[in-house]
Amino acid sequence: ARLASAKSMLIVHGIDAWTRHRSALVRWSLRRFDRVVGVSQTTLDRFLIWSRVNSARTSVLSNCVDLNRYSPGPKSAALERKLGIENRSVLMTVGRLDSRERYKGFDEILEALPALAAKMPNVVYLVCGEGPDRARLEAKAASLGVGQRVRFAGFITETEKADYYRLADAYVMPSRGEGFGIVFLEAMACGIPVMGSRLDGSREALLDGEIGILWNPEYASEVTAGILNTLSRARAVPEKLKDFSFAQYQRRAAAIIRKMVNANP
Image 1 (spheres, rainbow, N blue to C red):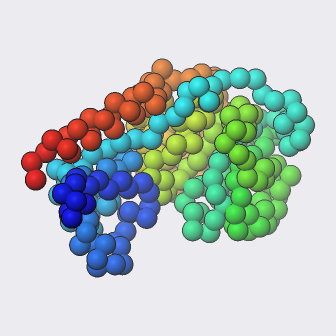
Image 2 (cartoon, one colour):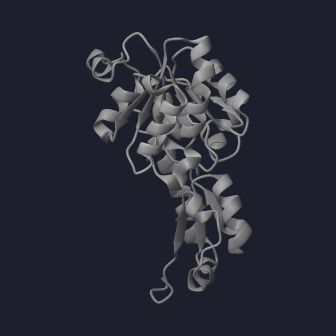
């Protein structure tokens, strides 16, 4: 960029930006960007702690959701039969099943299931995603005595996602390291009540609790209470979800780029 006398922008998304990069060259280069854009203020704040980037050169550009692709609709009877969840109260989490991404909250939901089942005998947990940590999670579910209440759907394509979201009665992801959480937007666009975490970028996706439930995943009792609270909510698309539309994303992105281009060196 410098050789071409061009402006440069760095975009940071998640936990890879939360800790000090091991390369001295990368760390040196960070302060040479004209603008650093973060998917959330949470991610930017953690990035700024170690990067020594001037905070005046940063902007937040939240993820957006395609409100044409994700929208309310009936549960697919065929999918319910395939997964064996007919007439059940369905909890759902989407994410890669990787030992490096255990912060998503799969373990916390599994640990809450015995207490939830005592209050809601028809509850099941639908896990959408694939990865090397699946075998451990399956074994954990069995050891907790809730193996029959957990459905591992495996990898689902983008074209299938809306139909899977519509199966859920509550989207629950009590994470600790989410940079933002576009899955919350997708679930809400399908009219599904959602629960996220107070401890990471989920707060910003849920507008500090205005459009979803926020609980602390460090306390099992809060996770259980949060799930029950979320399940009690009616299906609806929050009015403020429009703040995360693609049109709004375009406007914000354009404003950030204009500010960068017009800024003095």
